[in-house]
Image 1 (cartoon, rainbow, N blue to C red):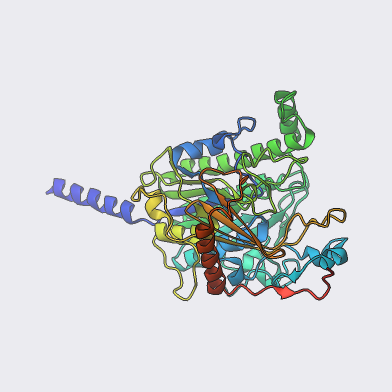
Image 2: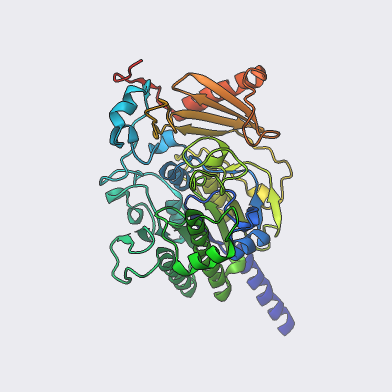
Length: 472
């Protein structure tokens, strides 16, 4: 009888372990390109902790941001929705705020859709909007976020949209916090501070036996270039005489090292607390890498950088880890984009998304759990990039302008609203986007144009408005 009792106890423990809600740790880097990690091929950088995560989980080779700039992508991550639904199209209206804004507008045939103003109170992400934090909180998770928000202030601030605990931190040294904190000084590094907050939060949740959703949106490796001096010295000596031997490049590599340190501390804490096996870990970035002194070392081998809709502006790393569920050391060629994160995590954690909340992404749970072998998506990827910036008075050209994009089965169509023209690339054999095959592949082009037009209607993207200041 005693043996039967022991067996029942073991069975009960097994059932509890199998049905226990998984914790979720979502780590978001800032401006980290596809070629900015050692595990993704850049041997000049040192990222041993992210490399360990890479080896322990599944990484994606066709990972995308929902926008080549910060705020629209972060809104898509939080909501699973495209920009027309979040009303966050741009970080700022540079055609009104830039020094040459008047000249810019004189060369803009159309005005882009109005966007939420992220720097004035009670704007940005709608606090009433259903989002990832609210979904996990509704499933009795403890929720927290520490780091860069960039989705609004006032009622749109990070601590007002669904997190139980949230602290926004801007810059690297001498950083500011919202709500204002008094437990640090100017010598503390932002990433170290946020990491410790994340560790403390996880430990409190374990102590109280609460599942958690922890969002860690680091300010690294966004400017200003403010790395730790000891890392600058180390990499300056190591990379002397190489193609990376430039002050700004060294600064970026040193900042990547600090990012990796923070990721390592989070992963180590999961082990220390004995919850690593029951925690889903995701690592990704908000958009492609910025130019570093005129080159794209951290976006190679792709064309372009942050702020443009070529691959270098939107290609980013994605790594998922969940012991005993995601096979270690695996990779997927499935295209994945930010709007997929919300439905995927909800699916993996078995939590409900409000039935009235539209989701533009798909769950890739079956791919992560190795239950789907086909690398094909069930729907195309879509971008609406409406940012006018970088106008050159001599060439009369914009670095960035309104570009709508659709990608399906390896074919990528770009629609230039200003010139009413298109580009088409076959990324399967032309990942560098060097050969425009729009006229050559007219059947494919027409199909993608029709799909793009349907996506505009589905999301209610505003029609381009004629700019009254435009001068031919």
